[in-house]
Amino acid sequence: MEELVIRDAEVVDGGGGPSYRADVVVDGGRIVSIVQEAAAAGCQRPKARRELDAEGLVLSPGFIDMHAHSDLALLRDPDHSAKAAQGVTLEVIGQDGLSYAPVDDRTLAEVRRAITGWNGSGDDIDFDWRTVGEYLDRLDRGIAVNAAYLIPQGTVRALAVGWEDREATPDELDRMRQLVAEGLEQGAVGLSSGLTYTPGMYAKDAELTELCRVVAEYGGYYCPHHRSYGAGALEAYEEMVALTREAGCALHLAHATMNFGVNEGRAPELLSLLDKALAEGADISLDTYPYTPGCTTLVAMLPSWASEGGPEAVLARLSDDDTAERIRHHMEVTGADGCHGVPIEWDTIEISGVTDPALGDHVGRTVRQSADARGEAPWVTARRLLLQDRLGSTILQHVGHEENVRTIMRHRVHTGGSDGILQGTKPHPRAYGTFPHYLGHYVRELGVLSLEECVAHLTSRPAARLRLPDRGLVREGYRADLVLFDAETVAAGSTFEEPRRLPSGIPYVLVDGRFVIEDGRRTDVLAGRAVRRTAR
Image (cartoon, rainbow, N blue to C red):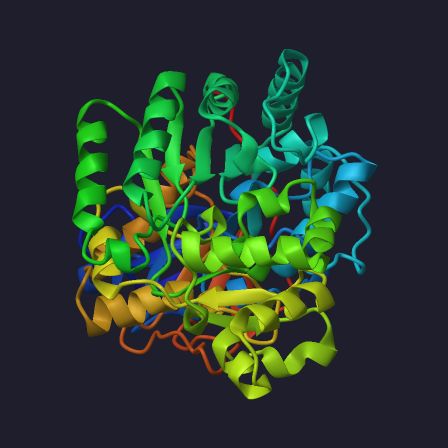
């Protein structure tokens, strides 16, 4: 007898078609049968060792978070309710060109310092891996939800070239190609970049194109955080489309937003650019989060020249008064590339987290508010915070536009991604709320998408980008990564004031056919594993 039958569920199967009522039978981690309208038709109803009455609940595939920063959280926090409670059953990590494999001892220490604000210091983690394959093996010991990995181009460049602003030599480029190929052979699904973060930003298009050629050979995809989301955003998108088309590589645009005042109302221009490329045969997808503010680290706002050489070099420049004044001028007057070419507005920069508890009074305030409370200029406050927190402070950047958010999420190649940084006292609520916020706010309350459309955006579309043949749909033979939610009540609990509140209306989540959320509570099940790239 099979393990589980989910009775009388309203199945929204991820394919975008109309929902239907059915009994769904799960066994051995897979969906083994789907019996539609069994009760109404008087059919023999399937039996199983356990029956779950799903009357009034929607059954859909588990949600796929196409842009996650859980690289260490999956290892540190077995509970991981931040994602499991949202109905997320698969996260794509290794984002924005910086993560923890492949590394050697030197680059591991450097990367840990560089992205402390994203993932914490890692002092509580046993870094017993160096290669991509070893990291995926570590995930296979058991995690809350599944995870796929992108090879981080910045980390690869740090390993082969270092943190200097220069072109790679032919030998260094060969080494980077080799590292990317090895990571893909070991199971990574593609390559990410952070082209406003060091050292990835120092790569010219020719270098990126060569790495994308390797990705294309293995059937992976390129996922860039491109060179600007502010001034020059459209040109930055065009650059990514052009180089991946030259390389013959699939393109997935990370957190595809149009932010800052210069881009208000300009989302249709982005979509027109993408539609033209799609019509010409380009393979493009994108992800967004359903909120207007962005989230990153305070140090990311600095001009790229100030970040050359890695974290210790940055701290040295900030400690020098003359150099610090040059940094201020670039940020406040010229418009630093770290701030997407736009002069920084300190009243839009909210401190969301610090690594030093003694600096906690900054959290929840904008830099201008903290500066005003101290009777000093905003740059003075920001500089002191960067130095005292040793570059570990995270920020929310309130520069988005709601009409752009809604326009982009309607596009046919759109998928969902939280871009959720789980660190800090007041993280962005998207880390805990992205997927129920789509379903509750944008589907039920605003009608921006139908329920069937939205579920497809969050399930089958990302599964297709990841080339996963047995995930993302409620189909017989598919993996039983499933979520049951109440379409009338599902909502994000997280807010900017209380960002770690869990969502409501999602009572059951299954990973590999096992309940990770049951009756609205996290179980102790660790059914997640690394999801490796499938061979072409």
